[in-house]
Length: 53
Image (cartoon, rainbow, N blue to C red; front, side, top):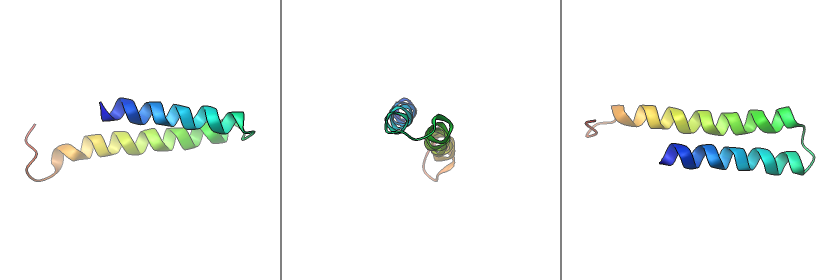
């Protein structure tokens, strides 16, 4: 569920920045970075102590 919310937030950031006049590619790269961090945290959370999945 958290990954879906992170992706949604990244896309919202992309649209808002693009609407404010930022270049589309720059806004997309920021959104992609947010989604990449969220996905990385989701993958790494399984390796934390006490998390058996």
